[in-house]
Length: 236
Image 1: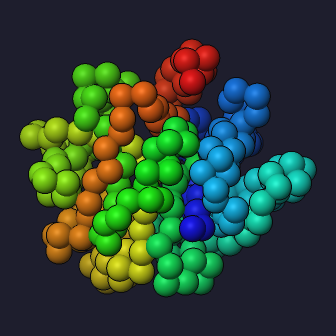
Image 2 (image 1 turned 90 degrees about the vertical axis):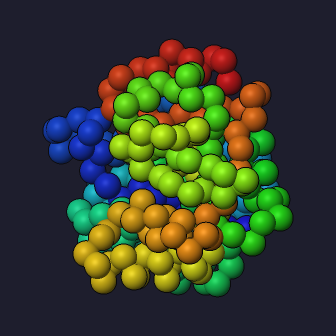
Image 3 (image 1 turned 60 degrees about the vertical axis):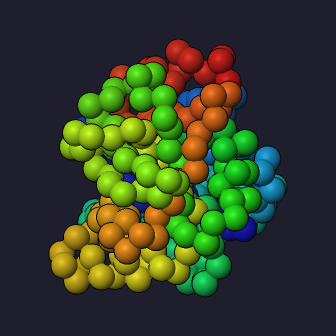
């Protein structure tokens, strides 16, 4: 199974200055956020990764090439509309993944290899989202995307949900139906990944894969979240 990493945005929530490097190249562990994501995917058997680039694309490409593509096949796709909603970046991956299911991650989400493996191996034919039921342990719960899951299906999702029982971990297994949902949302003027996911929820085609107690995930979206990630890295 191929994986797609969305790394086209400007990371404006982490910093305002545009002379900084892309967020995914920040130091993390023995490498960078991006190298941690790729290493975890490699450990699950993924050997083909598509990286969607936009802002400061050359820095990301040069970094990956300096690491000999991490010993796997890496394809870069440039999203010239990277300043628009992140759903545009996922659509840009369509020629690279074809009609086959694929794993999709944002460039600032680090997830346990075991959780990635279970996403790959899940028997469901639906589109899938990794979710965490440990709501009380979430860092910056106010900023988290909330999810209501019933009988393994996602029935509601959104940052402003008042009734929810788990949290979106930012790792997906998607198929061609996601692209169709995204195209439909674009016709309505909606450009976000969340809009397409909501569309799939409405037609009962968004299932949940549960994070296990011995697994971890980190969303590095703000300076505080980055510091939190650095503070707890030894635990992983």
